Length: 150
Image 1 (cartoon, rainbow, N blue to C red):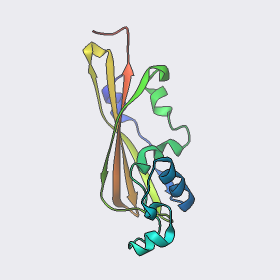
Image 2: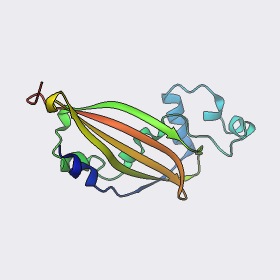
Image 3: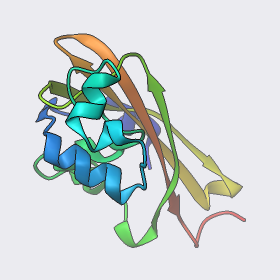
Image 4: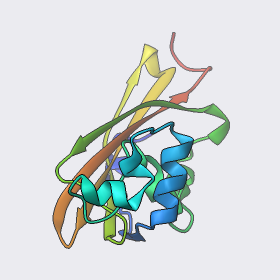
């Protein structure tokens, strides 16, 4: 994978409406037991205007865009050789149901290890509300190249 070509790729921003039912579903799926993630009254009693976004919710927002994996095809990455290697988050402010967020993906780093047998693609999604930072979700994909290196 060409690191410069990867970093030069441009992604269209994605606008996402954060819906209450979706947050409840995600909270349940990830085992959130705090009632602020399920019960609107509990969230409001805790000082939230609506249900807050649960931890790690921002992980897959960019996958909702049209042809979300196009960038991997453009880089000639064989999907059968891709592993999700790591995920991290930096939170700047809370987001809540009823808000509209913008996701701006970009590839921030590409590097290889083991003589090219493993290539790492680091993609960051900057998530904003009305231009103000909400969070950064950084994902590292690992591409296995069995014929390369050692």
